[in-house]
Length: 302
Image (spheres, rainbow, N blue to C red):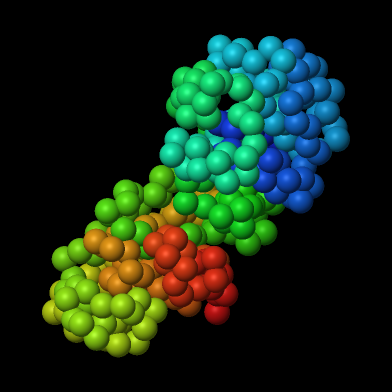
């Protein structure tokens, strides 16, 4: 359901409570979407049809929405697919249950389902939403995202297209904590020599020159870098020609602190030198409060 010319963009935003729906709605509002939260499901079709000439529209839906059910939501998404004047997309914000529970505990908010315990309410809500995630056009897992990161993801998926071309996100991560969702390509760096086993490098990160030199000294390093670079030189222009607006590349290692960080920095900078619009994010550095502010930064193309 990709938006095309002369079709009005409409985004339905849903997902479990606490996953960031309010932040996403506000981010879409900043992108000049007209936003409506918790509009009764029976009125969404009428509003969508009546708003065809007014510009992009974003509608927030959750289990509190009047008339909500997974079957009604599925019917709504199928209807949007058949409408010639509407370019509708379903955005599903996902999040790990333990993180949702922590967010409710930190804010002391009452869960909308008001079960006997927040953990039970979260489980019930996820069950109610079952099936919508697989139907979504865009899934953003907010488990490890800050509000700043979520706003950036929204801007990449739903911001104005065709001005700056393909946006490339490069991130590092630890396999111990799982592969981030939403990556288009994942490359494993665990075969490279590990700075963790060098005492003076153990507490440093891949942003440090000494760590970079240690990883680069691996005899397999140069061949790996060149082959990955050659692959990206083939793929990036091809994705751009196909009209893809966003490409996400992940580098993983054991702890997400040394080798993957170094590789994300190195390849991210090379892509920027080739003219790509690149953002670099280090998930584990963000989580541990190391390195870059928010663990993320933009790399300006040359």
